[in-house]
Image (cartoon, rainbow, N blue to C red; front, top):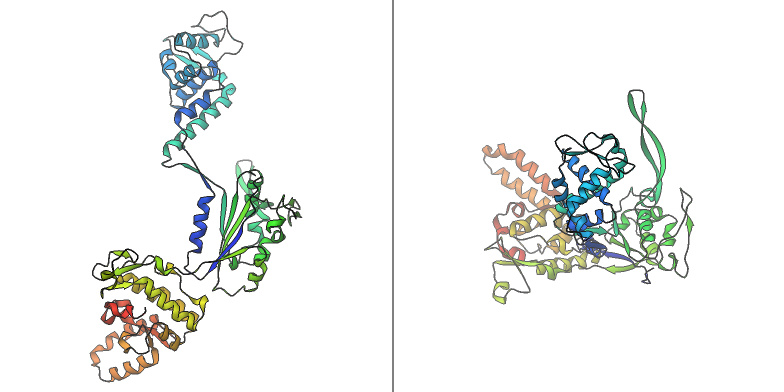
Length: 486
């Protein structure tokens, strides 16, 4: 077995810091890319151990699969199976004689078209009056194994031809934990099994219950049978489930020194099957944990002894600069020249995220920060407005408990006129609307219902997201509004 010490790592961080992306990258390390098998190699493997009689039978079965029952000798000699077998045997001459000899030797003694002295005990072929050969129907049962080999070869050939890239073999399993995920899905559990049964002319299904292996147990069995390779269990959002319940008695076994073959190796009897089990040393476990989820805070202490924790911080330096002149284009801030970076018509997303996170940490703490993934796909102003209105502001409002002063501080709204505020005071807007409505023309009443619905959709508690932000209008078409977030 590989002498490498088992790896247990949990990647922690706020939402949007690329934790799940890391798992996907790790999965590539546990994926073997095998080169495509050449069709000639497949055929060579098929024919290597076959006799000439088997090869000729295989040729008839191949023609039969293509709806051709009668075969002439030249068709046999020119078939790729016959040619390949001749190459394997270093034969170039008298190939027709070989075919004739095989065919005649395996004809029935009562054949009306073939007269041959040294017949074999088993007949497979016969010839009609036109000189075409065919397989005897009674020989088909004898050729079932050969027919199966042909079917497997044809299937492998189809898969090979349809495969654009190299074949891949995964040495990992990936799951996403959630509140209902349990031991039964991860280790083993009793599951319903539908078994078909027939009664007279009717068929029905009967349900029974059986102990079935879970995702982790299946991976461990694969790893135990392949000790020279490393396998990985990838768990997204490990703190969304009750880890003690999911792992059960395996929670101690996953410790690196308690794996099979290690110094303090442990075995247990599994809860349902009673089988003895230990976690192979060639199984690595990687997981992610969102530090903003405090619903299972004690879990952190339970896993500290068993996992190494790696912090994933926001990486604003990965974000581009967007231009309002050519909104469809973005540029890496590391490659832009200073003239473009300092342009009044650009928005530096790295600076914007850094500014927001600095103020978030001052007011809400480090665990409320925004990850760079929130802005990763932003390529123009409209996309930035959508992300702010639909993702960033709602998340921060929840973290701040809807407190207007905190939200307005984070978005630098305190000293701004109401029209340029990202987060507006709902009560001030109501008072302002009341004053305006007193002077409005009665003809505007037909739009009252529309405005009421719009206000409800963007207003929560004592704050409201500026309508102009979502409409890409007024002050929010200008870059300086976003630059002040730096």
